[in-house]
Amino acid sequence: TEEFEEENRSSKFDENRTVRIRDNRRQERVNTKVEVLDKADISKDEKDVPEFLNNYNDRYEQIKNLLLRRMEMKSAVSIQRLSRRDEGEDAAVVGIVNDKYSTSSGKWIIEIEDKTDTFKVLANQREGERIVPDEVLGVRGSLGGDIIYADHIVRPDLPIPDGVNTTNQKVKAAYISDLHLGSEDTLYDRFDRFAKWLNSDQASDVGYLVMPGDVVEGVGVYPGQQDELKVNDIYKQYKMFEDWAEKLPEDLQVIVSPGNHDIVRLAEPQPALGKDVFPRISDFNNVHLVQNPQYVRLHGIRSKGILNLMYHGYSFDDHVDQIQDLREKAYDEPHHVMIDLLKRRHMAPTFGSNLLAPEDKDYLVMDKEPDIMASGHFHSHANESYKGVNVIACSSFQSQTDFQKRVGHEPDPGKVTLVDFKTRNTKVLQF
Image (cartoon, helix red, strand yellow):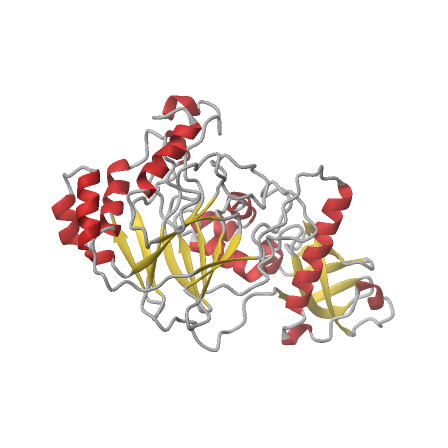
């Protein structure tokens, strides 16, 4: 990669160069396969109280079922049945957090509810500080009249894996995010060098390119944005991506989901970007426009395939703001917030952390156990592992913006994370 970078550092991207490189790629390419799972049944009908009620009931049931698989929660009962038990008895319940407040001693009183009743829980300082409104959790402890003295706060979390899921064939996937095309701060030269690399022999075993959101900078996303735009027409911004995507190898599978700067609605789940923004590439066999969030199974060829959870990460800011431990480190090391949400098995546990379009099913529950979780939004970069899951905070291709300067956030742009599906080993390239 260093040799490739040195050779191409000063060259500009042009069509002749692209064709010549593509013709020189190794002919022994692996087959690829993309399966988009469980698309959200997005309705455009007006949402009101009944839709929110159905959504939260579904969230409760989905996460309750995950919690009841845990040994600590096998004896869980409904809150209503707690009234039949004597003081001092053991108690285990599953509830959704309705409210919490601190006591003079530094502990926390948590009010939880299920479909039968509400109840109070007394949690220690450390556990109480990490509990967030609207999350579904389990409680184990002893009864003290009208309160449970919590010994354990139990979250659905991921199970301990038996092993790491891999593919039979050697094939790699590349992960990037937050291109923000149209911005004055986008690193266009680096982005073009990455396209050249994808056309080179060094990338002949890269079969997939995964991009979770913020393809373009957008227009009118925040006050004063027009002063920071290189291209102030959002459709021309998307045309820049089409121009770039047309230069990629035809056998590279490109999977793109939207983010909060893209032209779809801000409320999640977000629909996929459509033909109106990508008239030239949306019908390409190797371009897959998916929703946000989205489960995508890659390379299920003579193997289970690798299950990818793509979520842009718009809820991350609010979630980090609620937990001191995350406030101290998540912006520089974004895998911490991703792992925290994996433990809760929900991408936006607190109402208001994202704009929600409630459906009958809560599509932000992590009902499956992913092999890879790929997010963006923070413009930082992380490549970590948690319980057999590759946790990838995808790097941006946008340099530090004026807003980031004002808040003291230093992005980490131009990095590409590669995952070898046969070994699940990773490598990070810097462009």
